[in-house]
Picture 1: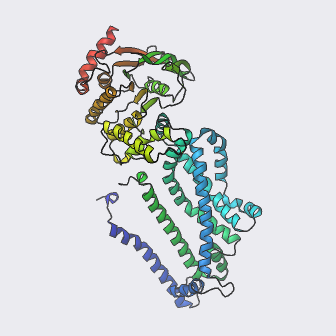
Picture 2: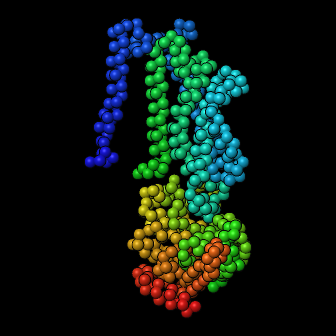
Picture 3: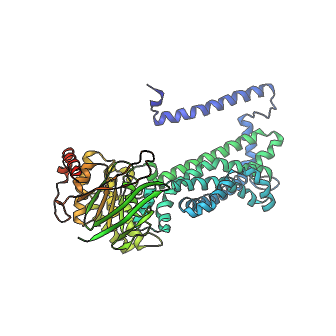
Length: 271
Length: 272
């Protein structure tokens, strides 16, 4: 049987999905144990026990200086920035993308501007943001928004713009005004695409968040990683990276689930 | 019967490419006009013009004596070959949409008693096209024939003065197509519709229509093929059928369509 025709059952696909992850972990453990056999004080590839010890201080013991549980405070701060940035981007993508996609005069006026902004590397704007908004939360959220909103706007505008002409004409023959057409025809069909755009933007959003935190912050997951880098504290960095990966994966999963739940028609689901 | 739609000296030109030239047509209320012609003869352009999607470069169109606005309006319903229904609405939602647009300008949604009344009207319309049992399906869950039934119901609920069909059955398989022919003939009778249908199926054109228009170029410049546009070369009134004539054996005339082709198109055109 050809490879492309091989069907993988549910249980098997779970096993097969876990296998490479397990192998990576085992390979890591072998190398870590190897290094520790030569140098028990090795910091580059910490053993799981060392990671647990290091993380315990951050997760369940309050920081002696500030009295905060640093791991949770970092997580909360980062998720707040990320959530705010994503929310603003998503909302603006929906509003701007919709009108840009469906109203020819708006597209003619602002289409080039959005494209122009979208091609600027957002990190290059970071100094401007720090100068304009100071080193506080605003600049970090602004970086995320500037980083992902133009892409999302263009994606939604493109999707709405490519709705079949027949549908737009049909809606008008049913008496729809521009507003009704946006509200009942374009908006609902933009929604599943919007969730898709959020999913694709999650990765860049994290990149911009970590970058902003690395440069100017006093709390946050990215801040912590770059702080402990000075002490070669791989026993903190690795668990933090794994935690970020887990957060991103859970968000992605939730987005997929909610898209299927809310917009089943877009996925060809049976109702 | 009175004239419903009138086209006077219509030209459609794109730059120096002439698509249609000198179209003069009077379309009577209650008629079923089929438009046939080779590809690129401007059949769909003519339909889009009547629909308001395109504008003519010369000439005027009047509907009930009033010049047409170059915009789609609810007095002209349309069914396209594809993409005529909204994929994110159920069958009922698709049919309600026209009523909601008219009655709720801001929210485009109805509530309470108004909604119940609209649903009753929509259900009646869906019953008429044979979708009474499928109110809550989404278009993606339906066959092509069912989607076209829905598209027709959606258009008819607005009680358009003219129903425009752009190769509505072109993508359906033959069995379904003949069912759809019966359906459209019945609806045309029951609702006293005026229909303009573009088709590439000659049997369908003669089987359903009370009048068949053939668009084609009658002048041809081999060095500049775009120089001359198509116009109405044959205008055949099929007088044996009228909206009030009742039962029409559509299926029968479709079945005999090779013979139809020969006896009607070729003979009559030669005589003309």
